[in-house]
Amino acid sequence: MPVGNLGYSMKFLADESNHKFDIFEPKYLNMKFLYLSLITLLTSVTYAQSLRSEKHDFSSALNKAAAQKKPLCILLIPSEKTQVPAGVINLWKDKRITDVLNANFVNYAPSSTDTNAAYIRKKYPIDRTPLLLFVNGSGDLVYRFVPNIRNADSVISRLTIAKTKFESEISLPWYTAEYKKGNRDTAFLKAYI
Figure (cartoon, rainbow, N blue to C red):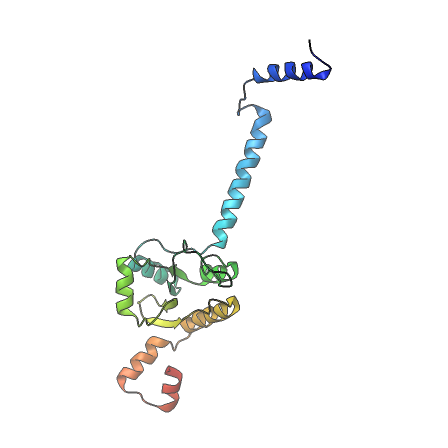
């Protein structure tokens, strides 16, 4: 014999357990729509905050940079799966840095096992990593720098310099060509170095 509301609650639960849950019922469709919208929003926010890098080979990234009239940023940095120590900025996920990189450059980050990494190391002067190389659509080195991995503002200012160097008439390929022609003017050499 049921005692108080306990018997009624058990009977209510027994009746509810016979009810079939149908996700296509109108009362559940609004919840489903809300849930899918939330997942889409979170995915897009996460994607927007991360660095967009070309997944193909070096030549296709170079062609894309030439077509978009943007410099190609070659990021010789640890993979995005590498754990970043405390106090060090993550170039893959720092929103301020990725916003600048995604807006102004075509990004390419070869993995250490990629055959293109060996080609890049042979073609461009690389003495240490992490290193960011900026090349024009022809593959000529325009600018390079070792990022200060503890200061995002420093990295952003260097990215701005890289963009300015790419847009200027006189860039590193011009200096290299002039040097090969024999130009040894003091002002020229000071600017070249």
